[in-house]
Image (cartoon, rainbow, N blue to C red; front, side):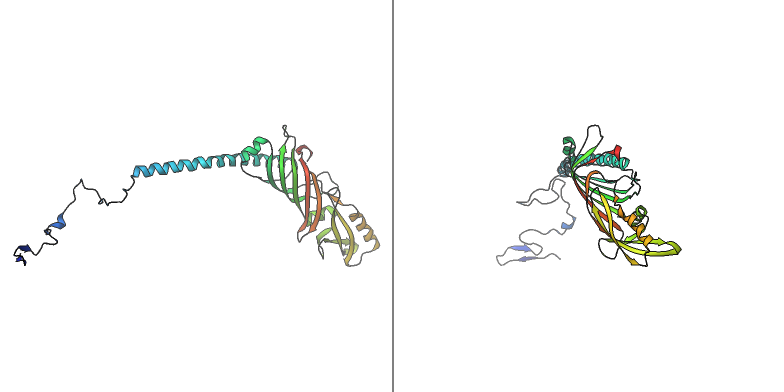
Length: 282
């Protein structure tokens, strides 16, 4: 029931009035005009950016990122091409069953290739055979670290300003080269050799291992550690150990600096300057 009351000043007021505005009981059915904005404009608030502008900014950012990455992608393609050709040439020259792992370091590679000198190249090759030797000793793994690598215009050779290398020689391969069963010795720097004697007898000896000139590995100062070695057996070991084994499958210019014994084989370390790779001579 609608009531009209009188205020203290004698004027009538509606009990549905609030703050001087009439209350419309049908206010819930109000629908905004199509001309009105979706959100009220607040003084000081920034209007939301249009979707088209957002898409334009996103596209521009994507283009800038692509342009920034393009030189990197091109450089990576050039590096991969050089690495592939280097691996192929090394495999053909050294006669490895598989192509080695090659990595050209430094950025950008494009400018290095244009100058004709690669600042640093790492090569890791496996199972390098030893040909042309009476006692061939294959290299199970050869890791090369080359600085300042250049190649001849006719591709006849490649030359590194300086290089370091590490070669791993497995005990089975050392055994094949010496004709004795070789394993790790009783202390560092020594290997153990088993000598087969007549009547199924065995004698175990140990000998020191060292690097000598000419990229050779020497076996010296053998001592009997198991069994009894007759004079004839001692003479045989003298002949076996008197001549060092030369490593013939190492790039020219590398010099053997040290040999250490491990549980699985020998580690040989090399350094050199003006290290040359000649595929036709490998």
